[in-house]
Image (cartoon, rainbow, N blue to C red; front, side, top):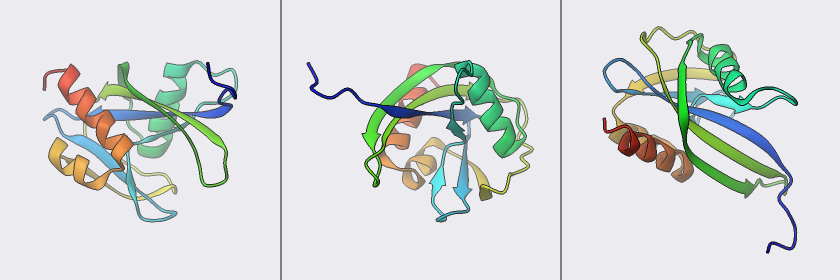
Length: 134
């Protein structure tokens, strides 16, 4: 048994597949790194609605949220707990309008996404791809 339970902020991310099986990645304004769209779950907010809200706010897309494909827990540089849940999502269109949180976006092949993303987000993309037999 773990001595100290993780107290964490919950982060929800969408592994968002477009109509031709491309993955959406977005570039953070804060440091220029690439990530999957999503964000923090609000207190008392239903999970799927929270993820849809975050994706809509960041990209203007209205995703179909399917199922969780990966989870990961860690402590950030400030020692704060984080828990991320990655969901397989799809959209019919590819027209993106970014919020101020991001400076760029790209619809890319799975292989390209895995080159741009962190190890944890790469694992989420690979899991989503394998589970859904793309």
